[in-house]
Amino acid sequence: MPKPITQTPTTDPTPTSTAAPTFPPSFLWGAATSAYQIEGAVREDGRTPSIWDTFSHTPGRTAGGDTGDMAVDHYHRYRDDVALMKDLDLGTYRFSVSWPRVQPTGRGPAVQRGLDFYRRLTDELLAQGIKPALTLYHWDLPQELEDAGGWPARDTAYRFAEYAGMVGEALGDRVDLWITLNEPWCSAFLGYGSGVHAPGRTEPAATLRAAHHLNLAHGLATQALRQTLPPRAEVAVSLNSSTVRPLSPDSPADNDARRRIDNLANGVFHGPMLHGEYPADLITDTAGITDWSFIHATDLAAIHQPLDALGLNYYTPSLVSSAPSAPTTRSDGHGASDHSPWPGADDVAFHQSPGERTEMGWTIDPTGLHDLIMRYTREAPGLPLYITENGAAYDDKPDPEGRVHDPERIAYLHGHLSAVHRAIKDGADVRGYYLWSLMDNFEWAYGYEKRFGAVYVDYATQKRTPKSSAHWYAQASRTNQLPPAN
Ligand code: IFM
Image 1 (tube, rainbow, N blue to C red):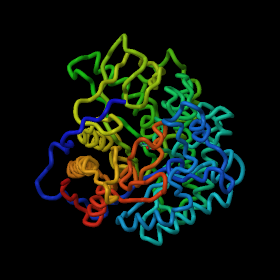
Image 2 (cartoon, protein in one colour; image 1 turned 90 degrees about the vertical axis):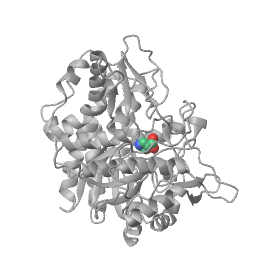
Image 3 (cartoon, protein in one colour; image 1 turned 45 degrees about the vertical axis):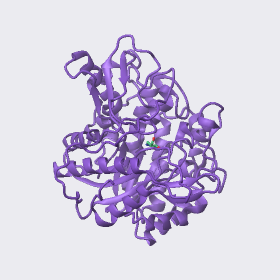
């Protein structure tokens, strides 16, 4: 992974005025996490292993052999964590439910002890005036479902809908914002394509089958939720839609590479979810890999459910060019693998966008977020948007007094929130923003090496220390305005 360049951090380049940007009065300020990244307690109260337990315990899969066994022990510390959120003036908190905790093995009845944890968590949030936002699937597929075929198997979509209905029934009285899937692109393309995520398979055709069954799972789960949730509840999905740019804007070949990656990154999900069809050129471009005969006659109608909102997760844009002899190990920012996550696009090269980078090696570019918001404002007119993830990893360390100063993260947040503000001014209906992440946690294949938190966690003691960015963000949340970045 390239080292980040540390210079003056990038800000949104076209601020609308010098006054502190003020957000709409109902704008929600939140932070996000996910179950496997924070909970720990992987063997408690009936939970069974997920694909991430298996993957992280497989030698060589994660940095340092790190696992989520303990993570940041949120399962036992949730009360203190909610108190911390209250101290930080968060208006909303996005968390995910661990499927193998509430429905071990992915089949059969829900386990009360598993559901009770999320009841206690949401009760605590509500008691503190923090709106819970619940994600049903943030990558922790019960291992038994992977053993039965995983996402490339159609049955997994039915299993997910059943699970969604159970959670909807149990928590529908206290959660008003529901997100079916988090970043299905990562589940399909990193889990079954490049294999850098669980379950670590590297099968191009299975990647596209997985994408379709994730789409189907989203549609069926949305229907199941509608049957149990009160009318006030919003149902959404969080896509890590990518802003894809051609290396040479005047090159037809680079523009064609951009088009193909855009279909594989974005259209493969938003096509069926928002428009009820896959992009026709995605099907023809990948004809050498699959004939897509796994799409059944009623699937597209099942996937194309009315949504109440769309969640967008954004970190950095992609820069691509046509490269007929592109190497198979790619620098597309999604981890090193000899297998491409992009089926049928071996002749596309990924480039590092110019500019400063975070500790992930990801270029900081708030204009990519503005572009993304405006794209979905056009793509889905009238559909409210939430930024369900945005944030940056830096190599944070406590100073001798134990304080953690992270001015780079403040600059990153300032730049991206300014871009959100600019998009709202340009007519986008963005209802809220969830900083990734509330606290440092298990960053998947990178283990605990990368710190995304606004709150520093000392992994030896589990002590939480809000970084200066947490205090900056609390002020933004309290005042509904962006404080200066320095
Ligand atoms: O940590 C992840 C999160 O689980 C999903 N979105 C991207 C984050 C940073 O890599």
